[in-house]
Image 1 (cartoon, rainbow, N blue to C red):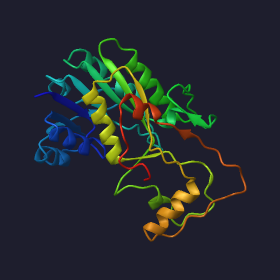
Image 2 (image 1 turned 60 degrees about the horizontal axis):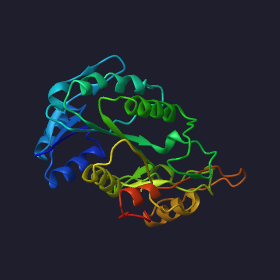
Image 3 (image 1 turned 180 degrees about the vertical axis):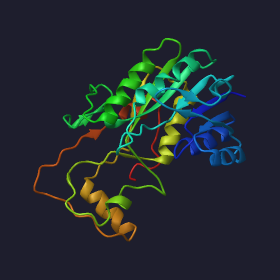
Image 4 (image 1 turned 135 degrees about the vertical axis):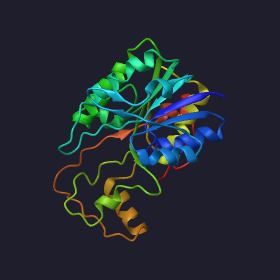
Length: 267
């Protein structure tokens, strides 16, 4: 039985782990919460309590990676508010453990925030020039992993992650004076996020970079207004005084190289 380890069994990592189990893989999953250990174990995932910090990595990382050929790193950077961190250092501290393990392939979950809004249309050929701290640290982490010759790294840059229990409209409902009404959305459903990761693993596609965004790009105003109607929420109001700034992320490479068909193309 092939073992896969998921560093970060959270909102995306947990359903991904369950999907991998259903495909016959053995899965190790890490969490920072002691309460979550039982949840992982009850789902058939081998649970590990691992915490990454700028100065050290705590937890039994050696056993977590033991007999693992593929490691999925799904740890989002915490770069909002006052509790900002050095995300690059957190991942750099894990790399020596990977180098000493049986891991041959790493899948790093990144974000389309590595691109700025200067380009109307963005593909994997577009040069990443992040203008946010989160984007800058993610890009540096991508390069840190991809330049390591001890393992192969594929980078998966997701757009905004949504799901049945998660949509930005829940934060935007009733708000006024929202910017960029005409900017296109770049979102992806949890179901497709898991599906794309499964395709990368099944097709054994490594040393690649993919953008992962649903092929539907209505404007922010149109999409979020309709979502508010669908969920019976107060409509958001947008500011049309300033020109809208935004980019359209294209996921053509996922459809061609991975032969992937989106199950939730219209979100």
